[in-house]
Length: 174
Image (cartoon, rainbow, N blue to C red; front, top):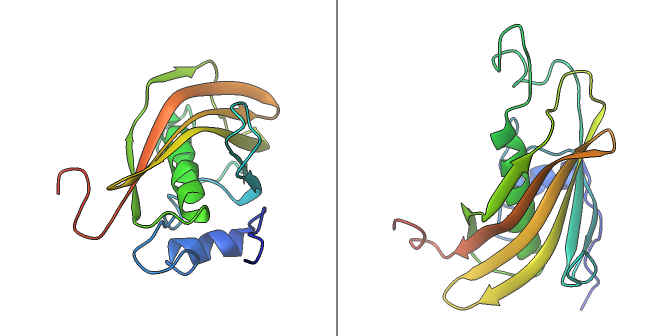
């Protein structure tokens, strides 16, 4: 079996969003503007805090990013939900990368803490996901912990991020 890539550039992420990376009906990232990172700098099936896999991604922050102007006018800040969504996106990407079949859906999280905010003057956001567990039954389920840092300072911490891969016609609420 050919070795899988351990890094993905922006064009690779767009290919994933179009459904070209993991095959039809399998994990996809959202297209911009909802794609919340510019590249994946590291992905592995081992390593990370729990030794069960890790994924690291980066977003180059620019003052003209789409979410700053409307959130909040005169007091721009990246919505916290977008950083959280990026972490769910990464868990879903990981599940597709390890060969899981089905479309990804965020299923919740255990705990989320914010201790800062991403402002327009920030240069770079780094996201880190540490896989805790992957279960394969009727659906593929990933559970992970994650954090978001801005310019080297961790400001979001998430515990027990849950993402499932669902076959066509199945899924939460289906």
